[in-house]
Image (tube, rainbow, N blue to C red):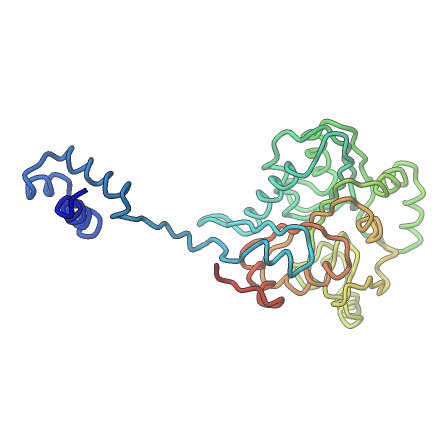
Length: 313
């Protein structure tokens, strides 16, 4: 290609892309047809005279592989919330894709409840045939129902046997919780949770709006639990900043999967969103039951800052 022709392509591209000159006006100026202008613009792109970069400012700049290595998990899936969608919606959609990637035929799949996991079921396609176990007692939250409704929808996607947990997540006393656990349907579901191939849980922080059980407790109980060192909650189970389990008078009242059961699952996928959840997520990771994280960009940036991962790539 001659230098003169390259200069022509550059002049036409400059007029069109930088000065917003129409193809008709460019054609008149260079005494060529507008079809030739279009062909020259294509040629300028093909030959590298013009390069176009598209920026998506809402997308995370965090290196997910580096973040996973720093956090000590197998993978971190960072959900990209596009304009007009919430972080929770983005994480729910990404969690559905992650589950469809991980689940295999014949698996036993356990799922807890959270608003994000509830939304996740709306994005699920057909799963390989799996048994589905409800990992946390029921919470009635909003018109979409609680954990029982979530398990019903997930079971329909998986096509296998479902193991519901027909009990509240939290009850008034440890004695009542123990009585419920002895009921055959509940004990059967909890025994099934001893042999999970895939577990899905949500990580919450011990604060208003961050925990599934927060509103089920009195202000005095919440303050006592915070004073005892709770920073995270997973399916009603409390964790300190070091990842140690914390009773604080609540653990015996909860009907849900235990942390040991999550540790024995082949793969535990945890979801979370928002920078405020960073401390809770780190606590849950220190507890040693998570292999895969699904989070939003804001939380990814907060975690990266805490573990020294560069936020630029």
